[in-house]
Length: 446
Image (cartoon, rainbow, N blue to C red; front, side, top):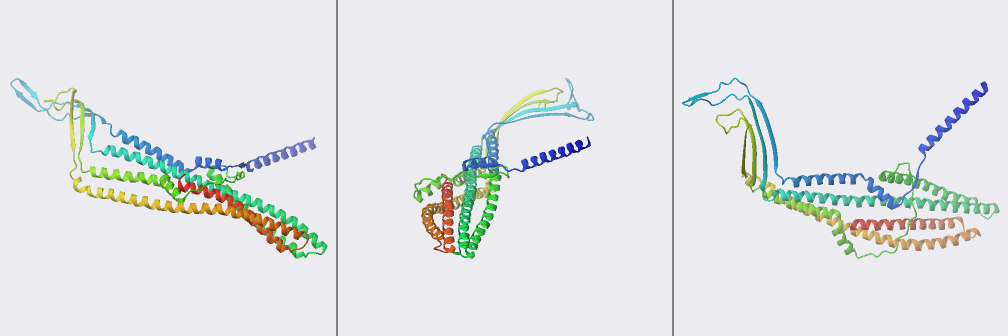
């Protein structure tokens, strides 16, 4: 019976350890996810914090616009007041033939209440200009959101393509290591047959070791890019991202650079935003000049007071009264104080125009650079394909010579290195061309 208890105790302990290990392994297991560029872009746009800030700013400006529109509505104020005064003042009484009259009767409970209304009639257009400025600010914020969306799409695309190049390069190098390993076996047979030196095997060993060292560097870079993409797409950072095969883009008609320049100037969100700010600065100048002008308002008030001061002598009762009128307000000091505000508004217009021209020139240079890079990338693909064909043929010839021990290992390794580099170059050229096209589209605002 004692043996059985010990047995079950050990069994229970072992089962608990197994379950605990299984739970820990499940928690630490990495999830593998195939992530297309389209899905990565969608997730990045959904998660991007700057876009959330921009959306919040748009909501704020929408509220500000609503407030500006409501400023044309009348101001309505309700005032309610109750006062209890002291009774230590002796009323003043005047005798008349008809009887005594108390001029300041003791009314200890006093209440003054009013409902007031004020409506702006004319301000020279300040209110309408203010509403227009709010609309322009909202419009500019939407352009900023558009610009940041384009940047987000390009940034995640650049990471995606870089990860693709590294992952495919890793596969190419691993395949090359397998090829060299097989050739190494052949050389070892030659050594046994006495038709090759041991040093020939060491040469291949050295190349394989160097390639393995490159794989370590590539793996570290892959892990860093994998983490960054997970962070920007809000995927768990322990997710292993796998990428689908890259579809080679069909031949695309490349327009004249002047077309790309005119398209960029017309479409770029930065220029649209600055154009909007140019309009805002012009409206600001108009408002500054209106500070020289007076304003005209209508006022009305309904009163319900105890006592009513218009009655003499005062009576201890509530009395309804009202008044309406016109209020003319002209800050004459603005004729000499407002000059600097007008000057400041003019300088703001000058500054905004200069900033627009500066950004425009920068965009033109960006278009030229992106256009040149894309043309260069397409040319590199043609060259890389031709170089790969040549390297494959050269490798085939040298490998055949090695098989019959006609050449040294050095010549074979040189041919292998050229073939490996040609494959890596074509792999990078395909990805770089697509990224260059995306950059050209981003720069031109397509």
